[in-house]
Image 1: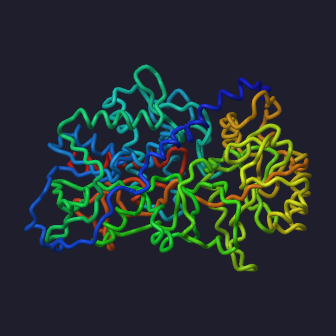
Image 2 (image 1 turned 45 degrees about the horizontal axis):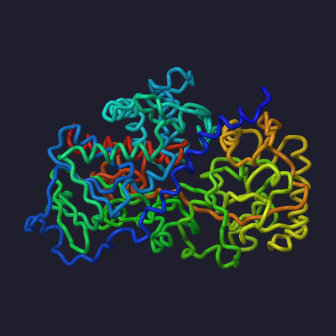
Image 3 (image 1 turned 30 degrees about the vertical axis):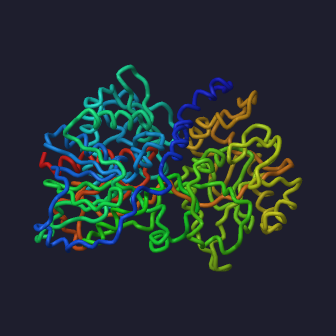
Length: 571
């Protein structure tokens, strides 16, 4: 492998920057979450025939994240009218627009032919089924794979874009060791405009907004929250109650309601009901309060996978921690600046340990996988020993990279970053078992000098190495990074004081449990039967195959929203 110059190293920065480039937009996402739904005082849904409708359309789309492609598709497919409801008064796009905007798409797409990645429909389906761990329905996977090419051609043609393409191997396949896993070609593909410019989330959603604003057949109702589904006497969904500026509106949907309101990250009651452990931070929009899940459950829709999240580790910005915090579901904030998309964790001269001083996973794996490792229950101590985790790095790290939270070691440190001269002092100061930590670091450092990690296999993953290369922006100015020229080169001992420590906690990009859907994106009831007129996509639904590659949230939501529009219109 050739030696890397700093210029070579920085070439990978563009891909890594994508994940965080839009995060400041989260401040625009209303902390109030738009209008608050009020308890229903109207007649029961079976009396819907007596309603006086305030608005009417062929298709009603609820949300403006990935579900927005349903509105565009419905319009292109000939719907006479489309209504789009957005809970926030000012923020269009929800969590989607704050993401990097990449798509996880099958590697056999025409746009990827030049990459010769060897992917196939059969290989991709087998991989997605494995990622689903036996809990995901095959129907949506099959539909997704069989529609991805059609969707890509439709979207680029409709928007005047040129193609989908990859710019690096970072965040390619999260489970590369699974059968039929592919390091390259499935994850993190972006659309390119007619001039060949890569489009991240913000310009994509601006283009979607421009499309809506330029078509009179689509009505966008900002500051309007979906509240309750309306049924006819046969149990079909024929409309939705919504709240706008305190007024309750009845909106008729002649051909279907398509839900896409995201997860329930900011609904404390639902977090307590469904998640096995707390999520302490999230980059999701504060409007994600489980609206679609609650509306669907109220009419008998099946809920599934409600215990799962699109996980994301966070450095904990609060300098204080109590043992009981590990099971406190009320500790929850929107904290984009402290999210770690395998950035700091992927850097050499650092480890992540628990209160026993033990490492509890491969720190360089993808962020969703690392987040899952926090939830192990210790039957000896009767608690979640990995919450919080402790990020530890040494002087060699601090001379090369920024610390978690994007701060350099030089100068005054923020209150959540702790500095110690020795590992013994660090253990005492952070409440970590001292003997356990010293034993663990002695073993880790000895193996790291040999370039091996027999415990967790750090330094063996091509995907982790590519992700490391994409994080060049975390390097301090004028640092020579040419030493990192192989997979094992990112495995370095943590042995030179002073040492730095930051608490880490599990968080989310979005919860991912929701309404069970079939291959048509149609919601099913408790018996697995379709609920006429009701569709769901994105993270308010069960989705396609979980977090199977970089950009899975965007691709699954957008492709299946396209499918939902076709299904509702019989196209």
